[in-house]
Amino acid sequence: MKNFIVANRKHIIYIFLIFVVGSIISIPLLNNKLNVLKDDGIQHIIRINEITECLKNFESTKISNNLCNGFGYSWDIFYGNFTSIIPGIINIFVGSGINTFKLFLYILLILSGISMYISTYKMFNKHELSIIASVIYMCAPYHLNDMYIRYAVAEFASFIFIPLVFSGLYCILNNNNNNDSDNKNRDRKNLLNNKEGYEQKENSNTGICMLILGSSGLIITHLISTTITAIFAFIYLIFNFRKLKDIKMLKKILLSILLILMVTSYFWIPLLENSINTKYEVYEPNKMSSSESVNYHRVELKDLISNKDNFQIHELGIVTIALVLLTIYSIWKMDREKRKIVLIFLGFGIISILLTTKLINWEYVPKIFLFIQFPWRMLEFSSYFLSVVASVSFCSTIKNVKIIDVLYVLLITVLLTGIFKDRIDYNDEKVEEPKIRNST
Image (tube, rainbow, N blue to C red; front, side, top):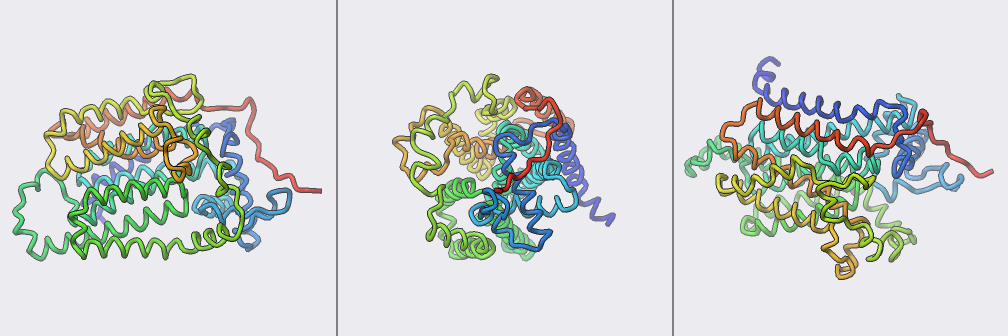
């Protein structure tokens, strides 16, 4: 145990910092007047209470019996149950849908930070870079928007899995995840020795596990985020098409896809069956979204910098903007592989931002992409890609990043989240548990 702690001392310290940052960000959750019933919040809290009753009665969670005036609603058939089963189990012990919902938000925030830290470390093998990326990601304005404004717990949970998908792909495609500058002059002949070969196999297997975990988690959490992630992942593979000429590499990716489909089959098979045989509102043309409705929700360019008048948070974040701008200077200091991933992620981040703005007219976009409903959803992806770019740029600009440098960035990032506190909605009195009104 002692040897484990010594060997992983830095990891333990930085994961502890993730808990500290997450706890600070989550302080508003302790206020019993926080209006968690607004927007998507009331739906998810009711769902948690319903799933809890199903679990207590040993009933199937596929149908929530008390919803729709006692008629019942097949919520878990059409919506991933990651955000219902887990809080449902927690609620058995907590006994309050509101408190369980708040606790679950806190857990998801911490897990997103840890996921981002591990994923970034697997890609760049730098503790300092990874913790900076993790905290910027946790404090991303749109991340806070899902947590405190929209209470969109499914999309909020998807923040955990997106980093795992791209880190998994990266590890599979590169075999060796060690891109530290100290190793860039390593003799290629060393790849032939047994130790190096074992490390490559281990890293590749780790990549497969991360890809399966990330993709499966997305599928059972938020299908819109899953679809967008799949599009970006496909483009990322195109950028690495030369590596896919290796049959072994291609087999690993295809095997991963097969395992993902098998693991999540309990969800997507009933979903597909019911979607084919039932008229479900979300799949009807122009019901959930149209070109006009998507265009209506576009964001002004200036709103990405600051918009205090908007109740939602669509800003990119001062720290993210400042550190991403360092890429202009730091890109030339990076080794070839690091430069490639930074440029790809920077491109993905810029595309994600542009798709949220009024520069894009969705009337000219193929109708199939209207599933996005709200173009500002793309800020979730710019939050991930630009967090990575920002951290790499910072660590490439400063030659020897010390813990004091990390703490400065973390402190500034956390403090700047305070500028959004006025967007959080509080009631005059304690928020009461929502009740289901049954038919009489």
